[in-house]
Image (cartoon, rainbow, N blue to C red):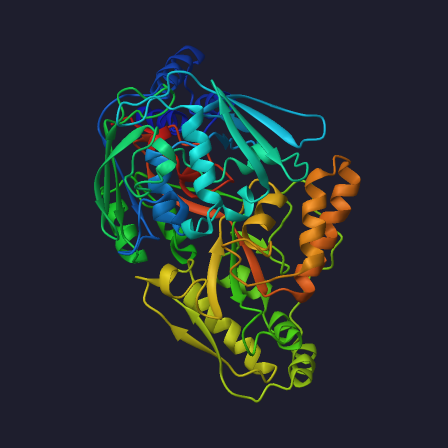
Amino acid sequence: MTDQLSHLARMAANGRMTRREFNSRAAALGVTSALAASAFATAARAQEPKKGGLMRAGMQGGESTNTLDPALAASEVPFAVNMIWGEMLVDVSASGEIDYRIAEEISSSPDAMEWKFKIRQGVEFHNGKTVTADDVVATLKRHTDEKAQSGALGIVQGITEMSASGDMVTLKLASGNADLPFLMADYHLIIQPGGGVDNPAEGIGAGPYKVVVNEPGVRHGFEKHANYFDSTMGHADQVEILVINDNTARTAALQAGQVHMINRVDPKIIELLKGAPGITIQHVAGRGHYVFIMHVDKAPFDNNDLRMALKLAINRQEMVDKILGGYGSRGNDFPINSAYPLFDDTIPQREYDAAAAAEFYKKSGHDGSPIELRTAPGAFPGAVEAAQLFAASAQVAGIPLTVKLEPDDGYWSDVWNVQPFCASYWGGRPVQDQMYSTAYLSTADWNDTKFKDAKFDEILIAARAELDATKRKAMYTELANILRDTGGLICPMFNDFVEAKRDEVAGWQPDPNGELMNGRALAKCWLNA
């Protein structure tokens, strides 16, 4: 009974059991209420953050071409790295609310065209300098420069004027935007000294850890920032990310205790890993989606009949079942699901229809030459198998889809946003405007389908200023239908974030905003052993 009670206590300590559940199961073991109360109190104390130690994550999604420039972060390892050393004006909490970071207060004009951000006093960069309103303005201005190639370009382009006065940053917009604070949570907008203009890849920020090792594609090491402003993060003395792109090697490293947590657990081994001693599977549904993207400005994908043929030639349910193992849901060729506010669930779900796909393919007049879909193991978990399933279902419709396997290293610099048809993924964004502005606005640097539609742009910009929720929802529905019917996005599935951690890792809180607690797991968790 002692071993069983100890097991229950460990589950409670790791946040896997409520007090009521603990007491109920303890009573079933014949444990007295006094002993149960004592055991639960011990477990609760284990939930108090412990300081010190070295915590490691093994991650897929890193390459030798990665950089510390936040503007260029395009895959999971650079995202997590930058979230460790950097801070934005604000973040978004797991419950979907604004989490004030470098900004401590936000206010706006009634028409949402002018926003003020009060900068928190005493926040220190890793180089010892104090974060100022001028640093914030310089950072935002850098991301408006097309030469910076920032993933946040589509977001900041709507800002017409930026100014700093004392501890206040004022942003004036071309049109009202009720979601602007959420847009400032974009992970590219890490505040840097002087905006990072002189050396954007220096890795100097105001986050919980300082960069001490930067070996892209191999290892990233950090040590605690002694003067970090937020005592709720940065519990370990050191944290480290090991880039382990191979699924088998990453899982083995976790089982051997070489790392404390891993991202992107292969759905095929989830059930097996659940039975491994000392390991817990963590998963949460969110806004992430696995996609195949076509450049609508390049042949043969500049033909909408061909694009529609491919959209109808993919078996979405088969992919959810076989690729995600049920840990996700079907997509509908626009990047929004029920996790977003103002989602319209009445838009008809696109189904696999080989006959209709064949008709659109014939109508397109395509010459019958192979249509090449590029993918890599690291594009998303199961990306190669998903592409092969896609090719098989397309062949039934008479569409000559072939799969070309690319190496993981260099995929996000040489294939994604470069080649006309490839596998990719998006982690999603907190609000619809941010998702659309980042990837589908005509002027967005990360418009990875090269989709340009004046009507789409007009509606998106107007929706930002629309404060009536019913009218705004109708506008987002129109955007969804335009993109779904004419865009270059094939979105077969929305994925759960599936990760695994060792039981000595405490403080884990599932976050639908992104993998590994939205990139903050190493900063927010601690080691109990």
